Length: 337
Length: 285
View 1: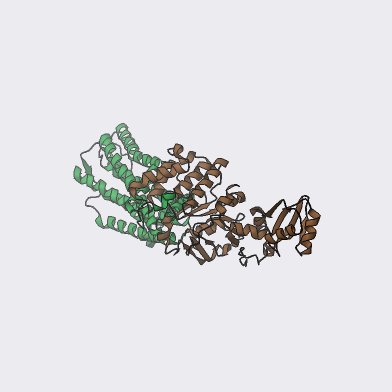
View 2 (view 1 turned 45 degrees about the vertical axis):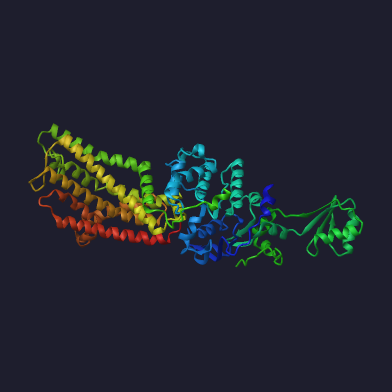
């Protein structure tokens, strides 16, 4: 949606140490390989969207990132510290909402957060009530704070989970499907919160099924399929890499196509313009050629593959994924096996 | 929130232990089934007292039952001891198992264990906090039973001393001491079963499995103890010490037997927590 440019331009500030990094991560559950050979890098300051079909290993990867699950092989570095040794140092600065919000049904929202806050190393006892109040306020739950968690709607539970992740100012916030069960207003609020976190310099990792959601909020994307990362990088680069075409609207379609063909630039005529293949050329070159040939150019725009197309290509069929041009540099194709 | 990262913050590496323990205790004592369980346990000596009072009142002089029960009439301080030893056959072990089941398996099932691990609370520390919660609440349950037992016993059955099963009479103070001793002995045995239950609890996400396995241990152990061919196994069985607890009303006190029971419980506690710890350190959260 409209937010894409806003976040797209503030792409992760280059930092020496990534907020999180995995190398050769592998997890086998009773003979089933859940995650294999995952080399994920979350640049500091980025909002990284983790995409992938159900069972592609998103949650398992996140759980290993947080030290909840011990990898079968490979290593995890969280905020510059290796897990599990560095967990006590790095985890207090990480907020997480994993696999749905976990709370005691018989306690109220506030009591649940007070309990979560009691376990936060970076929260002094005197500041707990204020921190809990602020977190409830921030996720819009202040009015329901004293109701039992049992009676919360799915969306309210999700908000409380988010409040738990935001109890303390964090360097990294990991959200597993944060918009699950939320109404459109709630989804928008989550997006606002993520934008606030991003603006404050917090790195965010968010997994989602909702491609539009990721497209609107993330600066970086990692696509997982069948337990391995099939593509990762900046969102804008990934989208550009997928589509090397330029749409030119002009009333003189024939003349435009001819002019380009003379310069060995492949182009096709459309109803009100032409589509130019950019694999062998660049956009300025195309425009220059057209203008020199006297073709009136009304509008030129790069055709972007939606994230949906990219996602479909990467995940629907392994053969399709392999066909993805390996020379397009921003894409980081990972060896599948 | 832009300034959030610059806020001064406590940079302690770990949350204070007392804060964690208090939070754990508050949570366990807010859980509805804990409260219902405690209320029912508190009623046990009262109901037993009323039953004995009615029975002795109607069939004047006739013995109410065997063993401790027959001693209780007109002997109020024996009621809490009777209530506790009677509950040791099933109700108190069940309570310990339930507390242990909720402590790890229950928290894993509703996702709250994950929250604590990510906070982070170190895994060994988390087990210690959980063990404390189980131990404190089971001690509280036993103390509560003793208290209602003393009050009900003195009100319903009366008595200013304690008639021991050896025929001697102890003064009130010494009798009260025996009640407290029973509290200690029973609590330690509940802790032993709770340790076994906590070991199971560390392995599963299903609280029901913990309760079933724990009660299975109690029942199997009880069955094995009555098979004469398996006499050699008796010293290792968890229930052996439980059967010795009623001896607390003997005069003089059979110190050696009671001490052996405590040692046996200690072994179970050690083994239980070792297993629980080894599992906690590797468990997937």
